[in-house]
Image (spheres, rainbow, N blue to C red):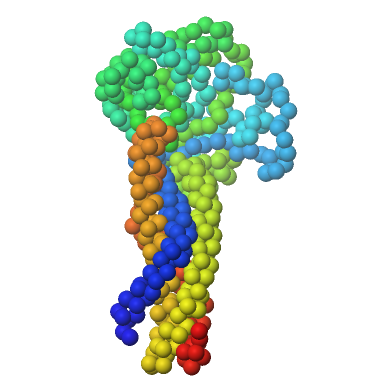
Length: 431
């Protein structure tokens, strides 16, 4: 028998016992379906994160925080409250050592600015504006994005904020509430932002909407340009003690993005020597990617366990087939068919069962995934534009099919070896 004849015979033999084969294929289907789904989720989320980093995360920005002086693990519980170090209105007493990463002072900002390779530094002060309003449509709580300098805004309309004047980058979540029909209609329109000082008096500032951002992984509120941030900070600090020093929880440093990864690593090392932790947006999102990768890995492990269990089903199916076809095997050997070809015949049967189950499982996963993507896009992830949770890439799907066929081949080894070792005389006498 040539390879083509062996393949045809193997496929025909597979369907001799349709019920038994169907049950075995179903077990493989479950494992292949699960593995395909988890692989598609990993591909979808990884693709979205990569797109966010490449199109949204600023490639020339570092988030700077003051490194903790404590050795890891030295604090086994929450630190005692110290009213002398409380931060109010951006001002504090003490050195900020009670905080996990400490408080940055003006001197710290100057030290960061003096590091070779740093072009400019923008300190980030906690701001707590009360509301935003447009054209008397009602006041709404305002969520500020303190890390606006770390991103290149994914704009639905408008342009990035200019440095001069008071400007904001609105998010699409605010459009309807503020009375705008769409993103384009909001660009260039004025809004009022209210903030309270230490005496409880409210100060209002007029600002112009320069652009509207699509909501992304990096989006955590409305963006303010530096001029408006400084004005709000000064208003918020009115009435605070004059002898306290302004402190910052973090700062954003800009560098030349053309210097290369090695130079960026050297820049981080220089800042670390001075006692500052520096991270790019890609570094920060990498933590999320590691967590997601771990979860996907666990799910894949369960899918592989299901496939291994299905492998025992293949062993059982083929062992029963060998027993039922003992006389047939003896006849094939008596007619001159060698043990190697018989081994190949039963191995091909096992691989075909694995192929059948994996292909059906992959196609089923694609069908379920297509429906799930539509439902998720309209409900759970409606605010995350561009996120497709399940992406069925050809290479991962092919890898799943090949993995299942490999497991099936290994599972078919024992029955195939038993068939190949049959004594033709004994086999022909088998009842």
